[in-house]
Length: 136
Image (cartoon, rainbow, N blue to C red):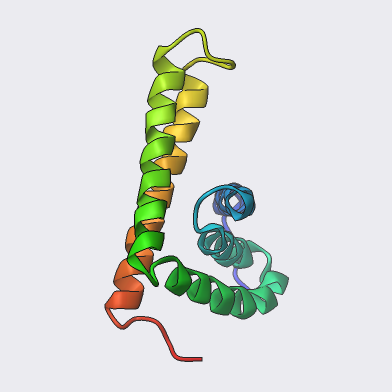
């Protein structure tokens, strides 16, 4: 194995860890958390090859969850509303000083969560409706 760049290793570890942690948080919050868990695992497996064995089972579950998230118009509408609500809440937290933990650090986190939810929902919709999902 050729000598790996230590900076690349650190960056992959940090990015993979952030994706994995965000995915775990989205498992209980509104959003397609399994897709982020999958992205985190794939990124971390670049540095830690022993994690590769977890990728395929998570990939199957993530694609199934993505398919379920866009299965009906009410589910799509609910997910879009949740994403827009997160963005709106982020703006409120950034602008209104009377809310608990007010400020743009909290607001930006909420806005990014809403954007991530909408982006992953868009991905799920294109993947499923575009015929990209594999039959398992």
